[in-house]
Length: 91
Image 1 (cartoon, rainbow, N blue to C red):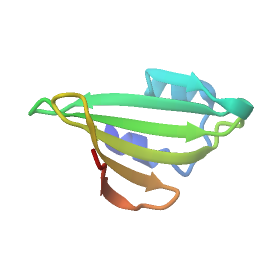
Image 2 (image 1 turned 90 degrees about the vertical axis):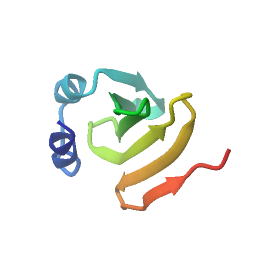
Image 3 (image 1 turned 30 degrees about the vertical axis):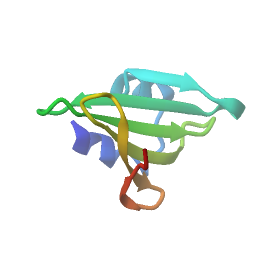
């Protein structure tokens, strides 16, 4: 499932397609949207995959957020437009 999300990043998606792949979204300023999908890990941690698109549904940013068992954000992995690798979040 995650691999299929990553394959869609450089492509132009439709709003309907994004709404099918990402069960959560919010409207942002200037017609932009933020979509996200949450995946539970085996040890109580959670990964949130976030895709931000412009008004034409073209991906402008894709990143992964990692939350610990208390629900605290501990890492962010920016994947698109530039892969910055995992970055620790300071408390």
